Image (cartoon, rainbow, N blue to C red):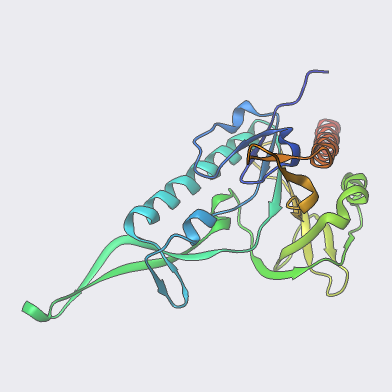
Length: 252
């Protein structure tokens, strides 16, 4: 079997056992067999000039850059799904910002003339090619839903390192993981009508453990053997899930 090429966007995969690219990359996802994606706009939400209604307000340049980059990933993720690829989305917290629309409103005349920039609400989940309704909520107690055999092996290995940052509001067609109490969906599988691929939504996976990094004599920080072993096991698990999805799709 040929080696699977995995591209991770915005999600730091322990041990560097997959190809990592940042949110601002223009990488094509069609080069990948499997995609890992985390909707993360931290570099924008923490780079703002002012606040509007208590949320970061981006300037014109950052606003247009964020929209352009989000459009890139929406397009790439949809194209990957159309091509039959599996994308794993680790669900980040909902990050909301205000972006400039490019429109301006004027009031007053002469020296009293005031220019107001028109802004609109934007969030990190607008970078994926389908609509979700995430609600910020943190927790660690979760259980598998019925008909979630697809990820049972993954969950057995990584449930202790998983935590939910959001739950999905409203009805979800194929839930995989729910909160232990409250029965709220925190993991699911999504398929688009336009393609044979699938999106596997998973609670956020903690890969920032202290034992995963070490600073050596040269002052650089390196992944530890524990991180490499964790990453290798995670990679194998995601490959198996993707394989099962493809087999299920083919038989259907």
